[in-house]
Length: 418
Image 1 (cartoon, helix red, strand yellow):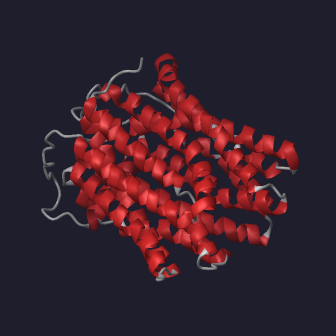
Image 2: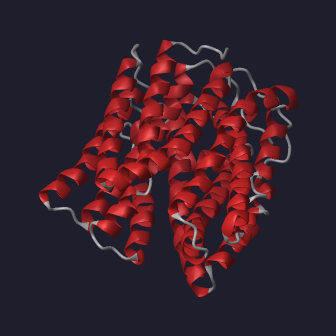
């Protein structure tokens, strides 16, 4: 049996699970609403996808310092309620005949900013909720939940969209955030107000720079930061092009496309289960570097997709390998990152990390769309795959300093790995 992390963690986990399933149930719903209900073209759909990430990241800049010095669970509940209200405005406007592309754009920005603030608060909350030796177990469960939702949500959501339309899936996603807020409220216990140390009495957007400064000054976090941001950007930039290649040029049916990216998500479950025993046997640094290297080796294969069953099998094999490696890598990195951060810097640093990642994905998605227009989707996918092969050079090469049992009590020079 798995290790029990207590009732409070179970409520926290349940809140995460329900909101994650809701998000994946409504996967690509905004794009479908824009296309089906508002007759939007490919340029508008691309703008909707990129702007939600980019502008949401900018709006989130002042939220990092704001989150840092407030109780985290009330912040998370507030972000859930904001996402619920923003998303419910879409089906409401649709019923009243008021829905517009501008509203979708605003909702995407609000939800994107709330996502970043929620993620920053949840990382700090998790670190306070479970013991340091249980962080990997907790992150492994979150990783398994994410990949389960990724496997089940889009097929169920696509079926629901076909039956009742994309607006209904947005309403379901909104309700999932309401249930998430209730789950976080049920965690219970008293959460002390964080002390404000070494900052202005009124934290502002400038305080978020502390998050970036801490990352860039840390020999342990700096290479991981650049690696994870670049890998995410390249993978996500190529994703729309793979859809265009498969559904357009190669003539795959939508159900085949869903199958190609749904079935491999079992690899995320396998990887998250393997992370802990691999770490116990080989050590944190070796597993992190190996899994991080292997996850960069798969995406180039997507440039060689062919029509028919062979091409479908190739996509499933590539995605299975990629997702399995990510399933191992992600919970170990999430745990390692929390271990490296003092409690009074978690929210600002995670906000800085998340903002950079989302802004990079938005920028690279736009760049790769232009590249595909100048060349072809297959060429742009190949270039992304080739660049991914170089990303392991950004992973930490050495593990010279032993990790202290309590990172918050160790002196700053002992909290990082050279």
